[in-house]
Image (tube, rainbow, N blue to C red; front, side, top):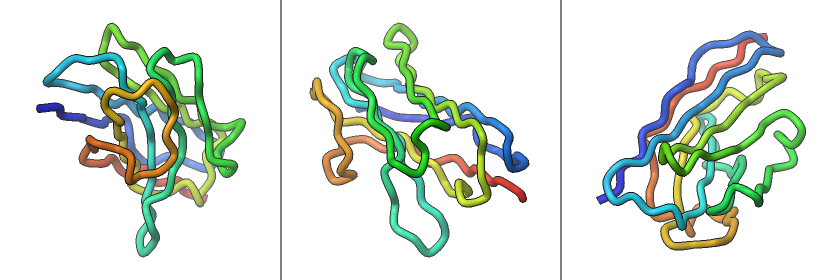
Amino acid sequence: QVQLVESGGGLVQAGGSLRLSCVRSGRTFNSYCGGWFRQAPGKERDFVAAIDWSGAGTYYADSVKGRFTISRDNAKNTVYLQMNSLKPEDTAVYYCAQVEGSLYIHRDKDDYDYWGQGTQVTVSS
């Protein structure tokens, strides 16, 4: 069984930075797409960023492009989300997720097989 554990959330002022980490445990397998989603209160869970199995391919939501960077370290079974120039509208619970056995990038949350428990990010104005 695969488990994903996020860390790195917290409270930060607008303009600040945070780095989220998502560590995979259980069956180690590098051929997966890693993604980050976020959900604000009363809203749907939205796509933020995704990275392919090699780390060479990435894709971002327009709202975070140029501010957030997704990366991965397969030796550490970890996917990261570096968030810079944070805005109050970035406040949400952030979830990492993975599509097992895929070499491609996925933006649709219904494609994802495994999810973490979420980590809260709060950006104050």
